[in-house]
Amino acid sequence: MNKTVLITGASRGIGKACAEKFREYGYNVLAPTRTEMDLASENSIHDYIGSITAPIHALVNNAGINPLATVGNLNFDDAHAMMATNFWAPVLLTNLLAPRMKEQCYGRIVNISSIWSGVTKSGRSMYASSKAAINAFTRTAAVEYAEYNVLVNAVAPGYVNTELTQINNTPEQIETIKNNLPIRRLAEPSEIAELIFFMASEKNSFVTGQTIFADGGYSII
Ligand SMILES: NC(=O)c1ccc[n+]([C@@H]2O[C@H](COP(=O)([O-])OP(=O)(O)OC[C@H]3O[C@@H](n4cnc5c(N)ncnc54)[C@H](OP(=O)(O)O)[C@@H]3O)[C@@H](O)[C@H]2O)c1
Image (cartoon, rainbow, N blue to C red; front, side, top):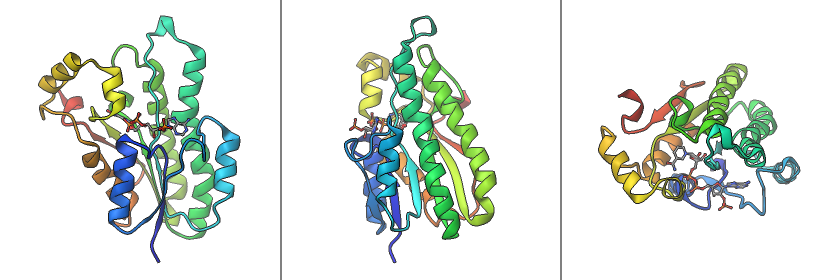
Protein backbone atom coordinates (compact mmCIF):
# COMPACT_ATOMS: atom_id res chain seq x y z
CA MET A 1 0.00 0.00 0.00
CA ASN A 2 1.30 3.44 -0.89
CA LYS A 3 1.69 5.82 2.03
CA THR A 4 -0.27 9.08 2.19
CA VAL A 5 1.15 12.47 3.15
CA LEU A 6 -0.76 15.65 3.92
CA ILE A 7 1.20 18.79 2.98
CA THR A 8 -0.06 22.29 3.77
CA GLY A 9 0.83 25.25 1.59
CA ALA A 10 1.75 23.12 -1.43
CA SER A 11 0.58 25.62 -4.08
CA ARG A 12 4.10 27.03 -4.45
CA GLY A 13 7.56 27.35 -2.91
CA ILE A 14 8.83 24.72 -0.47
CA GLY A 15 5.44 23.00 -0.15
CA LYS A 16 5.14 22.50 -3.92
CA ALA A 17 8.67 21.05 -4.05
CA CYS A 18 7.71 18.69 -1.19
CA ALA A 19 4.61 17.50 -3.04
CA GLU A 20 6.77 16.74 -6.10
CA LYS A 21 9.32 14.87 -3.97
CA PHE A 22 6.73 12.69 -2.22
CA ARG A 23 5.00 11.90 -5.54
CA GLU A 24 8.40 10.90 -6.98
CA TYR A 25 8.66 8.33 -4.16
CA GLY A 26 5.16 6.95 -4.77
CA TYR A 27 3.23 8.67 -2.00
CA ASN A 28 -0.41 9.68 -2.32
CA VAL A 29 -0.22 13.43 -1.75
CA LEU A 30 -3.03 15.37 -0.10
CA ALA A 31 -2.33 19.03 -0.85
CA PRO A 32 -5.45 21.01 0.06
CA THR A 33 -5.74 24.49 -1.37
CA ARG A 34 -6.67 27.39 0.88
CA THR A 35 -10.29 27.03 -0.33
CA GLU A 36 -10.33 23.37 0.74
CA MET A 37 -8.63 23.99 4.11
CA ASP A 38 -8.07 27.55 5.31
CA LEU A 39 -5.42 27.31 8.02
CA ALA A 40 -6.57 30.56 9.59
CA SER A 41 -9.91 28.89 10.41
CA GLU A 42 -10.18 26.11 13.01
CA ASN A 43 -13.60 25.12 11.59
CA SER A 44 -12.12 24.73 8.12
CA ILE A 45 -9.33 22.50 9.48
CA HIS A 46 -11.84 20.35 11.42
CA ASP A 47 -14.05 20.03 8.33
CA TYR A 48 -11.20 19.00 6.02
CA ILE A 49 -9.61 16.49 8.41
CA GLY A 50 -13.05 15.14 9.33
CA SER A 51 -13.67 14.39 5.67
CA ILE A 52 -10.52 12.18 5.37
CA THR A 53 -11.03 8.68 6.71
CA ALA A 54 -8.16 6.95 4.91
CA PRO A 55 -4.90 6.59 6.89
CA ILE A 56 -2.50 9.53 6.81
CA HIS A 57 1.09 8.43 7.41
CA ALA A 58 2.89 11.75 7.28
CA LEU A 59 2.00 15.38 7.92
CA VAL A 60 4.11 18.29 6.69
CA ASN A 61 3.03 21.54 8.34
CA ASN A 62 4.60 23.79 5.74
CA ALA A 63 2.29 26.77 5.12
CA GLY A 64 3.48 29.98 6.69
CA ILE A 65 3.20 33.74 6.37
CA ASN A 66 5.61 36.46 7.39
CA PRO A 67 4.27 40.03 7.36
CA LEU A 68 7.13 42.20 8.59
CA ALA A 69 6.67 44.81 11.33
CA THR A 70 8.91 46.30 13.98
CA VAL A 71 7.80 45.86 17.60
CA GLY A 72 6.52 49.43 17.94
CA ASN A 73 4.54 49.13 14.71
CA LEU A 74 2.90 45.76 15.20
CA ASN A 75 -0.51 45.31 13.63
CA PHE A 76 -2.21 42.91 16.00
CA ASP A 77 -4.67 41.60 13.39
CA ASP A 78 -1.68 40.60 11.24
CA ALA A 79 0.12 39.17 14.28
CA HIS A 80 -2.89 37.02 15.27
CA ALA A 81 -3.31 35.84 11.66
CA MET A 82 0.35 34.87 11.57
CA MET A 83 0.15 32.94 14.83
CA ALA A 84 -3.02 31.20 13.57
CA THR A 85 -1.33 30.05 10.35
CA ASN A 86 2.22 29.41 11.57
CA PHE A 87 1.51 28.01 15.04
CA TRP A 88 -2.11 27.16 15.86
CA ALA A 89 -2.83 25.37 12.56
CA PRO A 90 0.13 22.95 12.97
CA VAL A 91 -0.89 22.43 16.60
CA LEU A 92 -4.49 21.60 15.64
CA LEU A 93 -3.45 19.35 12.75
CA THR A 94 -1.08 17.48 15.08
CA ASN A 95 -3.81 17.26 17.71
CA LEU A 96 -6.16 15.69 15.16
CA LEU A 97 -3.72 13.42 13.31
CA ALA A 98 -1.15 12.23 15.90
CA PRO A 99 -3.77 10.11 17.74
CA ARG A 100 -4.70 8.46 14.41
CA MET A 101 -0.99 7.83 13.73
CA LYS A 102 -0.64 6.31 17.20
CA GLU A 103 -3.52 3.91 16.40
CA GLN A 104 -1.76 2.76 13.23
CA CYS A 105 1.64 2.56 15.06
CA TYR A 106 3.26 4.73 12.41
CA GLY A 107 3.49 8.43 11.75
CA ARG A 108 5.91 11.16 10.78
CA ILE A 109 5.22 14.84 11.39
CA VAL A 110 7.52 17.59 10.10
CA ASN A 111 6.90 21.19 11.08
CA ILE A 112 8.53 23.83 8.91
CA SER A 113 10.25 26.28 11.19
CA SER A 114 12.84 28.91 10.22
CA ILE A 115 16.32 30.17 11.05
CA TRP A 116 14.48 33.07 12.70
CA SER A 117 13.45 30.62 15.45
CA GLY A 118 17.07 30.53 16.56
CA VAL A 119 18.54 33.88 15.50
CA THR A 120 16.68 37.00 14.47
CA LYS A 121 16.50 40.20 12.45
CA SER A 122 14.54 43.45 12.73
CA GLY A 123 10.86 43.16 11.81
CA ARG A 124 10.60 39.45 12.58
CA SER A 125 9.42 39.51 16.23
CA MET A 126 6.09 37.75 15.66
CA TYR A 127 7.39 35.43 12.93
CA ALA A 128 10.38 34.46 15.11
CA SER A 129 8.03 33.87 18.05
CA SER A 130 5.69 31.69 15.98
CA LYS A 131 8.61 29.57 14.75
CA ALA A 132 10.27 29.29 18.20
CA ALA A 133 6.87 28.17 19.54
CA ILE A 134 6.62 25.47 16.88
CA ASN A 135 10.10 24.17 17.84
CA ALA A 136 8.98 23.88 21.47
CA PHE A 137 5.70 22.22 20.48
CA THR A 138 7.66 19.78 18.28
CA ARG A 139 9.78 18.63 21.23
CA THR A 140 6.82 17.93 23.52
CA ALA A 141 4.77 16.19 20.83
CA ALA A 142 7.85 14.06 20.06
CA VAL A 143 8.17 13.00 23.71
CA GLU A 144 4.50 12.03 23.92
CA TYR A 145 4.37 10.00 20.69
CA ALA A 146 7.84 8.46 20.23
CA GLU A 147 6.93 5.09 21.76
CA TYR A 148 4.13 4.70 19.20
CA ASN A 149 6.53 5.12 16.26
CA VAL A 150 5.21 8.61 15.60
CA LEU A 151 8.26 10.83 15.10
CA VAL A 152 7.91 14.61 15.21
CA ASN A 153 10.59 16.99 13.97
CA ALA A 154 11.07 20.51 12.68
CA VAL A 155 13.09 21.65 9.67
CA ALA A 156 14.34 25.24 9.92
CA PRO A 157 15.32 26.60 6.49
CA GLY A 158 17.50 29.63 5.97
CA TYR A 159 17.06 31.79 2.87
CA VAL A 160 15.21 29.85 0.18
CA ASN A 161 14.58 31.05 -3.36
CA THR A 162 10.77 31.49 -3.02
CA GLU A 163 8.18 34.24 -3.37
CA LEU A 164 8.29 34.79 0.42
CA THR A 165 11.99 35.66 0.23
CA GLN A 166 11.48 37.88 -2.85
CA ILE A 167 8.62 39.77 -1.16
CA ASN A 168 10.55 40.37 2.07
CA ASN A 169 13.92 41.30 0.52
CA THR A 170 14.90 43.60 -2.36
CA PRO A 171 17.16 42.17 -5.13
CA GLU A 172 20.04 44.21 -3.64
CA GLN A 173 19.37 42.74 -0.17
CA ILE A 174 19.31 39.23 -1.66
CA GLU A 175 22.74 39.84 -3.25
CA THR A 176 24.12 40.98 0.12
CA ILE A 177 22.57 37.94 1.83
CA LYS A 178 24.21 35.60 -0.70
CA ASN A 179 27.62 37.24 -0.20
CA ASN A 180 27.33 36.90 3.59
CA LEU A 181 26.30 33.24 3.51
CA PRO A 182 29.12 30.70 3.87
CA ILE A 183 27.55 28.76 0.98
CA ARG A 184 27.24 32.00 -1.14
CA ARG A 185 23.78 31.23 -2.54
CA LEU A 186 20.13 30.73 -1.56
CA ALA A 187 18.68 27.25 -1.19
CA GLU A 188 16.41 25.95 -3.93
CA PRO A 189 13.03 24.67 -2.63
CA SER A 190 13.91 21.16 -3.90
CA GLU A 191 16.96 21.02 -1.60
CA ILE A 192 14.81 21.75 1.46
CA ALA A 193 12.19 19.27 0.20
CA GLU A 194 14.85 16.54 0.13
CA LEU A 195 15.50 16.96 3.87
CA ILE A 196 11.79 17.24 4.66
CA PHE A 197 11.16 14.03 2.72
CA PHE A 198 13.82 12.19 4.69
CA MET A 199 12.42 13.40 8.04
CA ALA A 200 8.82 12.62 7.02
CA SER A 201 9.45 9.18 5.49
CA GLU A 202 10.24 5.72 6.80
CA LYS A 203 13.90 6.50 6.02
CA ASN A 204 13.85 8.40 9.31
CA SER A 205 13.55 5.76 11.99
CA PHE A 206 15.25 7.30 15.04
CA VAL A 207 15.35 11.11 14.82
CA THR A 208 12.62 12.80 16.83
CA GLY A 209 12.05 16.10 18.64
CA GLN A 210 14.79 17.86 16.68
CA THR A 211 14.91 21.16 14.83
CA ILE A 212 17.27 20.69 11.89
CA PHE A 213 18.69 23.94 10.51
CA ALA A 214 19.17 23.88 6.73
CA ASP A 215 20.63 27.33 6.23
CA GLY A 216 23.87 27.12 4.21
CA GLY A 217 25.80 27.98 7.35
CA TYR A 218 23.92 31.21 8.17
CA SER A 219 23.43 30.44 11.87
CA ILE A 220 26.97 29.24 12.60
CA ILE A 221 28.87 32.46 11.88
N1 LIG B 1 11.20 31.03 1.83
C1 LIG B 1 12.10 31.03 2.78
O1 LIG B 1 13.20 31.55 2.61
C2 LIG B 1 11.78 30.39 4.11
C3 LIG B 1 12.79 30.38 5.07
C4 LIG B 1 12.52 29.78 6.30
C5 LIG B 1 11.31 29.23 6.54
N2 LIG B 1 10.34 29.26 5.59
C6 LIG B 1 9.06 28.63 5.91
O2 LIG B 1 8.79 27.63 4.95
C7 LIG B 1 7.38 27.53 4.74
C8 LIG B 1 7.07 27.68 3.26
O3 LIG B 1 7.61 28.91 2.83
P1 LIG B 1 7.57 29.36 1.29
O4 LIG B 1 8.62 30.38 1.13
O5 LIG B 1 7.55 28.17 0.41
O6 LIG B 1 6.14 30.09 1.26
P2 LIG B 1 5.30 30.73 0.07
O7 LIG B 1 5.97 30.51 -1.23
O8 LIG B 1 4.95 32.11 0.48
O9 LIG B 1 3.96 29.81 0.12
C9 LIG B 1 3.17 29.82 1.27
C10 LIG B 1 2.14 28.71 1.16
O10 LIG B 1 1.33 28.74 2.35
C11 LIG B 1 -0.03 28.80 1.95
N3 LIG B 1 -0.85 29.49 2.95
C12 LIG B 1 -0.60 30.66 3.57
N4 LIG B 1 -1.62 30.99 4.38
C13 LIG B 1 -2.55 29.99 4.26
C14 LIG B 1 -3.82 29.75 4.83
N5 LIG B 1 -4.40 30.61 5.71
N6 LIG B 1 -4.47 28.60 4.51
C15 LIG B 1 -3.94 27.74 3.62
N7 LIG B 1 -2.74 27.92 3.03
C16 LIG B 1 -2.05 29.04 3.35
C17 LIG B 1 -0.03 29.53 0.61
O11 LIG B 1 -1.23 29.26 -0.05
P3 LIG B 1 -1.84 30.32 -1.15
O12 LIG B 1 -1.26 29.91 -2.46
O13 LIG B 1 -3.33 30.09 -1.05
O14 LIG B 1 -1.44 31.70 -0.73
C18 LIG B 1 1.21 28.91 -0.03
O15 LIG B 1 0.89 27.64 -0.58
C19 LIG B 1 6.74 28.59 5.64
O16 LIG B 1 6.35 28.01 6.86
C20 LIG B 1 7.87 29.57 5.86
O17 LIG B 1 7.71 30.28 7.08
C21 LIG B 1 10.55 29.83 4.38
